[in-house]
Length: 229
Image 1 (tube, rainbow, N blue to C red):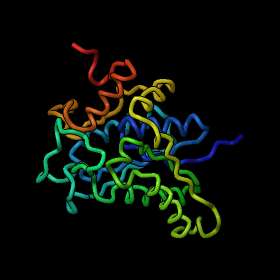
Image 2: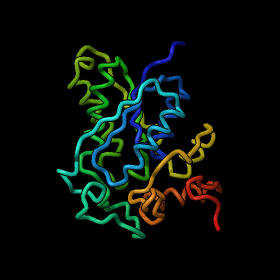
Image 3: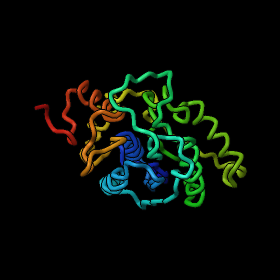
């Protein structure tokens, strides 16, 4: 069976890497898209390039646009601090939420997919983000698919766009298990929201803590940190 084309949103983080690898496993040829949106953790862009190379993507598109002018997030504004060592409350949307980020990213990916003739987009949203970020919920993904049918020539002509969220119901440990089963090198990724000088993970932001807990639950060593002690 001939492979199908898919656009994958690739941040360089653990989740997007795994979601893209699932697409590759399922027989899709990958076109990756990454965004430099003014985030303070720009190391992820270097990681996205390494991940794209390891996945053998057909093309890797990097787009620049400045969300710092909008602000409203500790990831895009120096006026807000990234939370460290704070309780993670699933009922509270953290300051690391970037207003409308996934809506913006998926809109661009939707446009590129239409140009490429691709009917599939993969995004690495998961259950841990679902509880905190409103644009990671299944309801949002379903609504965006409906939007795509209305907003594109492809949709009007009956070529339905499918947004795949293979990690949506998985815990961080489940995602890591899946990635390791696919032979992924998580040493290529970057997850930290507020890295130390030199790019090493801070170990204290929500993303670092969730990642560490996931590797600990799996009983594996995070290649970015190394073995304990």
